[in-house]
Image (cartoon, rainbow, N blue to C red):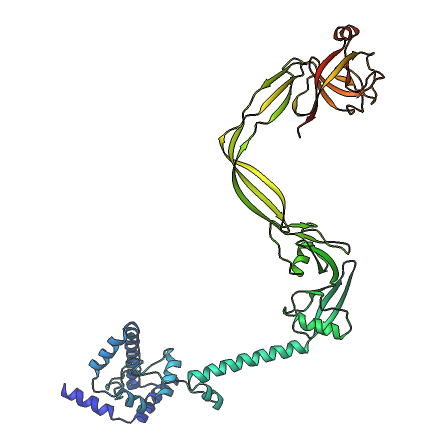
Length: 472
């Protein structure tokens, strides 16, 4: 053991230049295929040492930093790795080995028996024994690679240079832009070449060239948009007009487009409740007048009494001329009220029942129409006592309006009862006023009968008559 330790100490004192020369000698002999037995033994040991080094590198890469530190101290606690790194200069020889064997030898451990080469230090933790940094050949490279801050500065300089180059090339080659001028009545198109960078710069350039573009005119895309080759730009002439916004007159500018686009262009705010005319999707013209009514709603809840409603129903299931009444009752309920305000003024009220405290029932008057068959709901606009007579005529005869007369029609004095009025007469039934007569004056109603015998049996009677109007 003492002899081995002494041999290792002697190996450490050998000149690094001699080490380099011996490795170089072996490599050159290998290239010329003139290796003797001793040199072949050296190469064999190099191969074995190469594999051992690879295994050790693998273990080092898989190990933790603390384990590497402990292993290095255990293997060579008194070895000064920093001084060894400065003394041993075998970089050139290591590069030749890498070219020959295809592997990079990082501080390989050559034993003393290996062609009497000295013992080299094993590869340890990079924190203790870092890999030599690559030196740049130029002064500029060495300056910017000295620290992180200078490398960052170099990167920004490169980016700046690229941007300047791009801008220079862009300015040197003009872009082609298709420009269309649109008013409310016509469109003009042209093509220009420009070195402008944005649409705003293009606008200024066109004005300088004599194109008529006012401050109020709209331009699309937006002025901050970048200019691209073969892009299209729209210049829309703004026309001053009067509009009515929230009940007030206001001067706005119309541009070609829809009502919605013009409201946005004039920065007019509205919501879903507001009423807008014309509709938002309509195209504007030179005679368009935009109206925006501001609409909002208020709600309230009230408890109210409700009177029974009088309804009139024509019922063919009941004999003509006969009436039947169904008495209802008043009620009471809770109602939701919605008040509509237009431009600050109440315009309409909506009422809807929320809950009945006492549900009302309508008073219904059923009027029989079994002979003529009329149906539906009506309201009574007038009630009077009619002096009823009867008449008949040949089949197909017409009345004063040119309409046929038949059972269910009557003659009236149009000054007292308008033509086309719908009547219901007690004892007769439904009667449509489409005729008149010389003896029919004031409240006289001459009812049509199907035969002379019916007329005689009817004679002249004073009967209750209702003038009806259909419920819409």
